[in-house]
Image 1 (tube, rainbow, N blue to C red):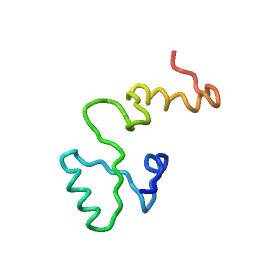
Image 2: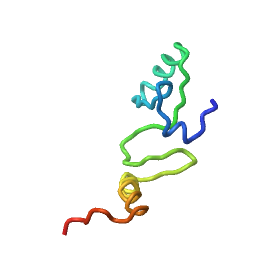
Image 3: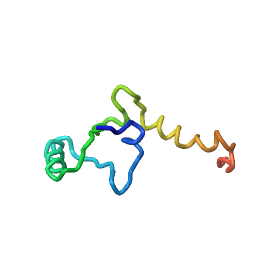
Image 4: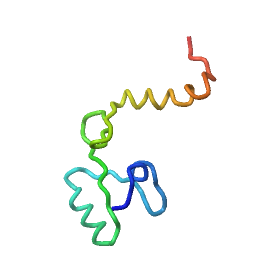
Length: 85
């Protein structure tokens, strides 16, 4: 497929987008795309678990993702806004 993991997860352009499709519609969606000549790469599935898992690469809970997102800039630049007391 020629798409590395970083591009598959984070690169959206006019030629590449990430879509979510119900599991039961996956085959139909792939067929529609392939019938029109659009390349398709399945990078994961969604379910009821609050977890982001990329098979054989990583798995993070929603709480872990929130913590990582909220702490990235303060860890690099230091606290800029005081937390409410």
